[in-house]
Length: 240
Ligand code: ATP
Ligand code: BTN
Image (tube, rainbow, N blue to C red; front, side, top):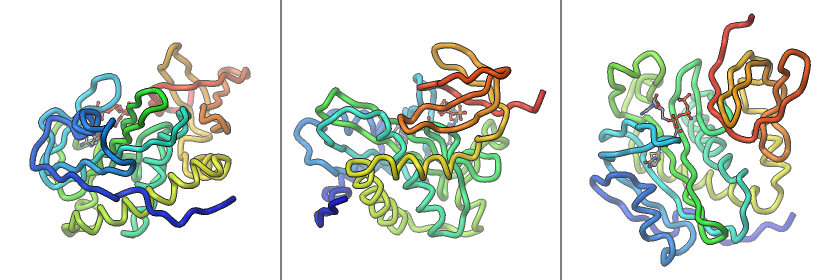
């Protein structure tokens, strides 16, 4: 593995007060923007999750999108997001895990989500939403958590941004140079392995999550037969 010396992520930062979605803003500048451009917003008026779902993003959280240009198409780039978030949280003493494919959870609650959008080989936008000092609204109290709630004090967002760009740079490099290492780490960090889950993707499966394969897909044991799921929404289910 040859390691370059250049630092890519965080080369240029566009800091906005409020925007509809940092992912949408990043897309609007992606063609001209240099690789590694970070779009950051204090708050988002229309933050989005997958499948058009809403991402609540008031002031106090880390809402950012990074424009990457690997020059090839590989959906495993999504894992650069969760692995980086996990390392950032570890820097603050918070252990966390991946709810395959794109969420980061701490002790049964969601602390971060990653939304990847791309245009062919031209660019990939990795959007990361991390609950930091922001309030968690009433309707998400059972399912969501913030760093503030876990460590009991406010965390400066500039320190977090630095940590995030540092870790993203490292994982993005590994993604490009040795994706097998990236996938090994994803496997280690995916806490749903061994659990009983429902996955809704093209089809609906209920079974035990067995493995994350090298191509990024989730392997399920559905009543004794193995099923490979490329993409989907995972919910944890009680054992039958
Ligand atoms: P899941 O629905 O299991 O959380 P997902 O990856 O499918 O995972 P999306 O639906 O893409 O998630 O993301 C949006 C979902 O995240 C919303 O449906 C909402 O339940 C939840 N959510 C929205 N804002 C926040 C937030 N700030 N923190 C934690 N969860 C949030
Ligand atoms: C998810 O949970 O599935 C994804 C949530 C992604 C939220 C981030 S916040 C920064 C970027 N801008 C958006 O509108 N969404 C992502």
